[in-house]
Image (tube, rainbow over all chains, first blue to last red):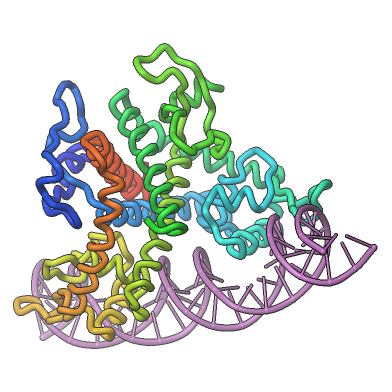
Amino acid sequence: MIQKLLHEGVEVETSIDGYDAADFPEITAEKQGHRHPIHTVVVTHFELARMIERVNRRFASLLRSELTKLGIEDVGPAQAMVLLAIGDVELSVGELLDRGHYIGSNISYYLKQLGDGGYIDRVASQRDKRSARIRLTEKGEQLCSNLRNAGGAYNRVLARDDDDLRNLEIAFQTLHRLELVWGNAARYGI
Amino acid sequence: MIQKLLHEGVEVETSIDGYDAADFPEITAEKQGHRHPIHTVVVTHFELARMIERVNRRFASLLRSELTKLGIEDVGPAQAMVLLAIGDVELSVGELLDRGHYIGSNISYYLKQLGDGGYIDRVASQRDKRSARIRLTEKGEQLCSNLRNAGGAYNRVLARDDDDLRNLEIAFQTLHRLELVWGNAARYGI
DNA sequence: AATTTTACTTCAAAATTTGAAGTAAGTTAC
DNA sequence: GTAACTTACTTCAAATTTTGAAGTAAAATT
């Protein structure tokens, strides 16, 4: 079912924004035992952005429902993402900002909520008393662990074989490149 | 432990420019006797989600600044995404909902703003008077066109050669798979 | 004709994000 | 050493975005 949709449902757009078609010779992925595209597709900036927006929306609602299933009422998907970003290390607010490209006041707000809920501990750094060191409490770790547990099922569905692994790997790296390009563009201009 | 992560995660090469594995607490490095990757890393479900969230944030702020540069005050990034989703076709609100996985009232709200700003026209469908048909006005098309124009620069940076194009396409398709898996999971359970 | 479903809209509330302004600690330049 | 500046973060208020419940009207079904 998913398989079918993957092959037939992907929007294959032939019009390219901001390009001269001649600049980009058509690409064809090799067939041998690959599930990924045989078709010619050119993906633009905005198509990727729209896809990312949609996927992000989907994930947020999935995460919300996982939290509901766990009976968590005081943590929304955005805060859960902060918890997951903290992971099992102790870090400063600044480091956390970098991890998620948040805006300062935003993270401050979430950390306050998470602190009130008992999900994180904050200790002033010894050598720099301006810097607050953050880490998960037992409760916070438990929540992350539960979420990760539930996430295992998705990992298994998404990464069924080598081909999936390769594609997910490329997707991850490519997203990272987008992150850098878009991020630098926003700061320094393209 | 590592074994388990390997089953549930996705391998990724560590050598990505400007990317420090320490940024991703969920990643564990491990050596494998594989074809190219010598250092492999495991990317989980949540890491992809966090990456997508970050990239989405970056793009939104880029879009906001493009809009500012164009002197547009009455359209935010979210509404601009709706305009881009409409594109150059005439469609119903329902189709638009599908395109972005929005919630009904959400799109309704944006369409009202965009209608007030003169960016879209809405006409009741002849054969089904419940269904509103939406399309961009001249002004809406102009804005999209300006945005796409500005986007061309990013396309050129992102898609430098065939390899980039291939990767972008795979990223797009893989994100589509995520969209389906996460979407179906939310509706019917995994 | 009555009921149900579809396709949206409206409204109010909640969640999230932003930005300006503030505090306190550290750094640098005289 | 201290005045000025920077950094690291917080607070608050406002803007934006998202959600959900309730509504309307047209179409489809019974």
